[in-house]
Length: 77
Image (cartoon, rainbow, N blue to C red):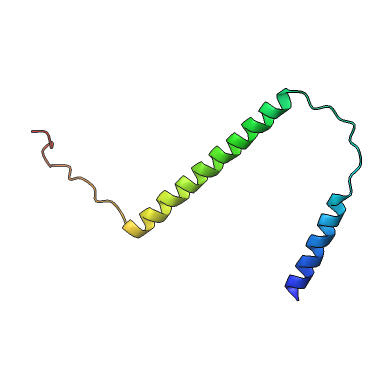
């Protein structure tokens, strides 16, 4: 029942969006570079969010890291 309703809504949305009228708009050459930089920015933000989520997920399964002892001698000597 929910699937049928979702399909109807999707079909009506697609039908409404397919009806177009002329825009009579001008897109200058800088618009392409602006859109490209926006797409690159969104991709970088998504990549950063996935990276942060991945490290949190891995950290959840690994558990807490052991802390070095305060009185231990330095490793290079």
